[in-house]
Image (cartoon, rainbow, N blue to C red):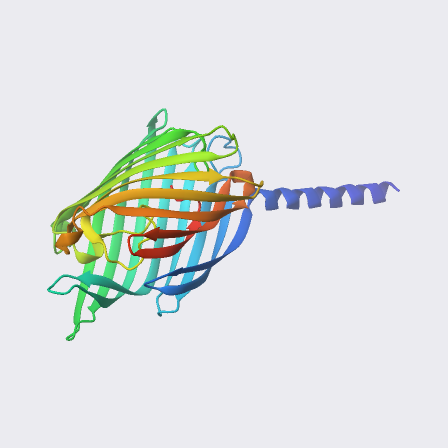
Length: 344
């Protein structure tokens, strides 16, 4: 009997230990399905894991790592690995990622009659950013970004070029959100400067300044969230084609043809996040913005509206980490967007 009890207790302890390990590391594989007017249908998978870098650290948010593999019906493909790490009681934050791919896209060419030109880009990249806490919710950071592009522009006489970019950046972050994955109150202010100097092998010198401010609050329905965002990106100097800002991503969803492209972008948007079940919700959003120093003169300063809605599912409910899909419309354009986390 005693032997039976000891064996039973050992088995129970082993099972509990296994459960704790499984709970500490949460692995999910998310299917990726999307569509836009440039890449057509997009398919893939996103395996992700959330974990604590130090089990004794009760202050740092959970870290996340994953891989994304995507193929589209216009023969675009890419794969990338990423990690967002929090450690030392959230005194340090690190973002690291890298990938490779081949993209078939298009851009609008100016002329007597503007027309879309197809182009192909073979690309690989690596990014590392480290941020250090210097005060209550205040961080300073530095980053390095490497990208290499093999471009082929499909003019009547195709043009090929190879572009290698090495960027060094500094950043300032004021993070007063009550949660990094799903805030319902607080704000986030980020200011960054990335430089592409000639001494690092860049053929053309340029700089990019990025400013973003997000604000979150809870309406009368306490489980919902209203999120507001203002964004500005400003390219200075000889900005290469691959570093031009293309309207249609996080800011001003609903533009997927690559028509609006320039050195500067300013945009504002708002989003209502309605949570009708524990693991499910919907969002509605609208925004307005403009680009400047575009190769299409008529596009400079043009008001670009954005409106849409989306669905959210809690992939990691314990940490309020959502995935979802958005459908958005812009000016004479539209797109479908797969999301890991919230749009902002």
